[in-house]
Length: 160
Image (cartoon, rainbow, N blue to C red; front, side, top):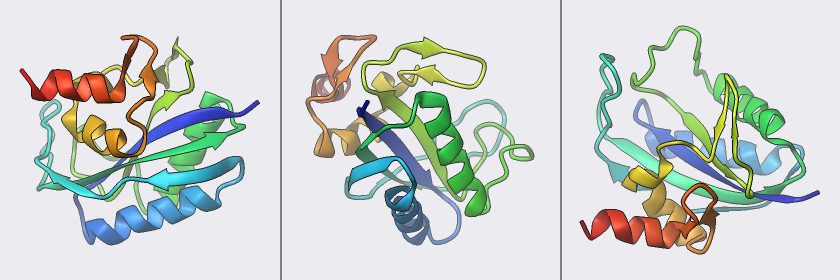
């Protein structure tokens, strides 16, 4: 069964553009991923999460594709790509600056909560840096927990 998936990508260490480009290429080549479309890269201010230093500005993007992989298998693929690029989640404080961040934000109409993955991403509808790039490649994707499209959620946030 094919599922339409949305991934948020971000980098704020090293050559951010090269990091996002490499991650996108690795995603496109991964087994079980088809028809990857990626947004343009946008620069955003870092979001402070917890006490970790979030570092400098991020370069963010969104990728949309179809996959045969179930959510947890796709999460493993994303984390394998991050690790191949030099990210070590085990030693990196939550919210700290990062070379690459690949977040699974939507997996079709899947709604789930497990110790390692919550779908849809619980904060995606409150983050312009996720919604703005995603709206350029998949404005009509519906966020199952809100029932609104990505474009509608972005408009809601930016028209406050």
